[in-house]
Image 1 (cartoon, one colour):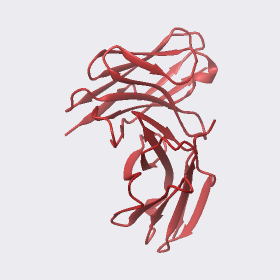
Image 2: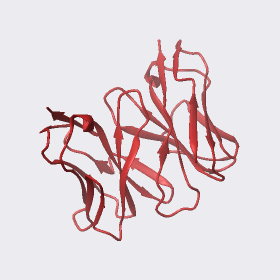
Image 3: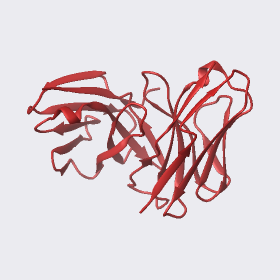
Image 4: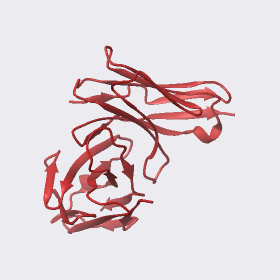
Length: 114
Length: 110
């Protein structure tokens, strides 16, 4: 069966510090991978998605970036965190077959920028 | 531009009654629709989905209805239970992209 991992679960960082959140998927090949953010009291905002290694699509311009160095690894980064980057970050995957695929989420990372 | 909207931020229902959650979308390119349940500090859990070629899909206590002409979908939960209390998100998908609504907080009162 497929599983998706995210770490860390919780992170407190000062403003201006760098960020690296990691997501890995097991039990599948060539998944589509996604990063979302849920700000306090808000919905799920799609940040980035990737349909293959090195292929990143950005949905919202911001100081965050994403990379996919391996087939089942997706990394969310920032060089300098802002207060507004605080939120709950979710990684998700869907089968890379296209069409009507279900998307599955990881457990999330709670990021607090102080 | 909010392509997927859940206009009711909250809903309270008595235990045993039916819960109806609504979702509207604007983009006619969407061809797959999903509902998720989410608890605080956890990832969303997939509940049920429907393809744009169907108008109804049922799974146990959960039924999703799709009205393409109105660009509207709804989730019906029969025999609502306190354990159903959570935030419910609808999502719409096309071409590998999934767009989520802002969620509806369902509270089932015992």
